[in-house]
Length: 164
Length: 103
Image 1 (spheres, each protein chain N blue to C red):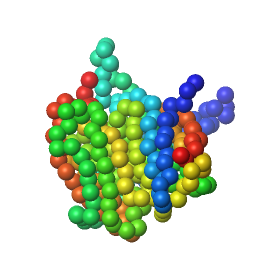
Image 2 (image 1 turned 90 degrees about the vertical axis):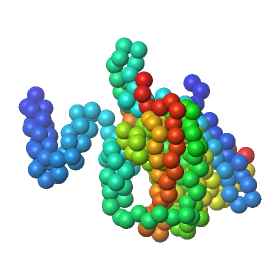
Image 3 (image 1 turned 120 degrees about the vertical axis):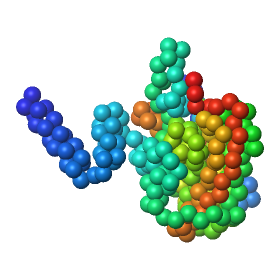
Image 4 (image 1 turned 180 degrees about the vertical axis):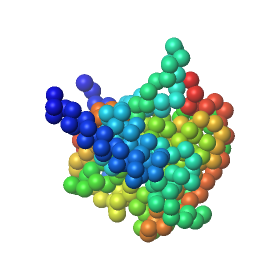
């Protein structure tokens, strides 16, 4: 019992420390994950997935490096998606030294949809299927040689894939 | 129980193409059920693909990835008969793994 109390007190101490040192948003996230008692999978960038806007996602995921538009990225997505629950999206690039490819849907509740780590020897190309709440820009971000490049395309959605 | 992972890996001349389909609800946390209550988020967070003792691809997924997710990529190397190991972990800590043969 005493030990239990002690551990509770120390956890409170940790939380208080977090609240003092971290910015408000970050400490809120920490509190939320403590409350949920479910740890995120190792290496999963939870904070980036919780951001709402494209800009905040980029800042959280890539540390605020500038993003340059590039015509060397090919973003394959339909002009019109009849069903927002399943929108096929492919990204490929001829840029060298690619280490990651991320896909954001600007108008979704949280912009970041998926991020892929591309180790050396893996082709910088990925196909997947994403949900889109409504008509939105889809943004592909490629990390190549430590720099960020992006391209975007608007996809019109007839029936959204996030509502009930 | 049958695996939640279905994969087809095909060795080409220099690269191996991998297509994977995973059975998972991928609940976004924004959808309400018949009673009007929000269905809590339940989605895969990471998927790792390993071949020849190294990770060849990692997918980091949020709730905006479609139900029963599909992903396709290719990597250099990999020969017919080699092992390809796929592991996913979701936000509730559930996990599944499958080792398939490259064909």
